[in-house]
Length: 259
Ligand SMILES: Nc1ncnc2c1ncn2[C@@H]1O[C@H](COP(=O)(O)OP(=O)(O)OP(=O)(O)O)[C@@H](O)[C@H]1O
Ligand SMILES: [Mg+2]
Image 1 (spheres, rainbow, N blue to C red):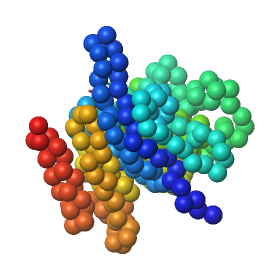
Image 2 (tube, protein in one colour):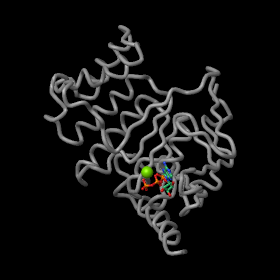
Image 3 (cartoon, rainbow, N blue to C red):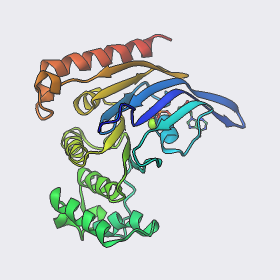
Image 4 (cartoon, protein in one colour):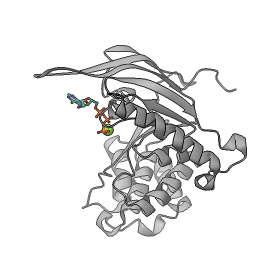
């Protein structure tokens, strides 16, 4: 039965960094929910606190105000997987051993987990590069491997912090599509931080738009291609895509010019 509770709820979250220079108020009031199985994109001006929000959700940082609540049928905090701009693949290990690394560290190299890795490599046509070194792969291929490495740990929630921003435009389009397909087909919940409005509109079910610092939620925009009968494979050619793009762009422009 579907729960009426969201998977993650940020309830008036505040966060300040404290250093020898004093307090930096990063987040003033962050309030949004993420449904299980959904894809949320967070966009906002540079330095507004996007990465800080992911660090709070992952538990690396604790809110200085407000609450972050996880609702799960297992009554346990969700397992979180991170994917970053830099893939952090180790050059001296081949692809397969890179994917194994997390399981080795967590002492979870069970037959079931090894089987999962093999099936993911097979399903997403990556078995052929299993014994190659990361340096032999393209940037796009490296990010696909980084995603498989993250999925090997069976995360319930994926946090993606600008994972495609180091890729050239063409590669970015195809890798973001592949990553989207993999995340949806594995039925994961994902939160993507991106500077790229078209990426947010093409991938997300919901776009959370942030203000400049100190950061608040400016708008929450549902992205409803499916409701209009448009498949995710063809969104970029649709009028609706252009409408979403314009709306997000305008709101961000206002934010950048309202000093
Ligand atoms: N460790 C830290 N100590 C002090 N201030 C920090 C620290 N990390 C981030 N900040 C400040 O907090 C604010 C939010 O930073 P954050 O990295 O979350 O923003 P962002 O939206 O992810 O930025 P970008 O668009 O550059 O990726 C910024 O003003 C930043 O300078
Ligand atoms: Mg950031």
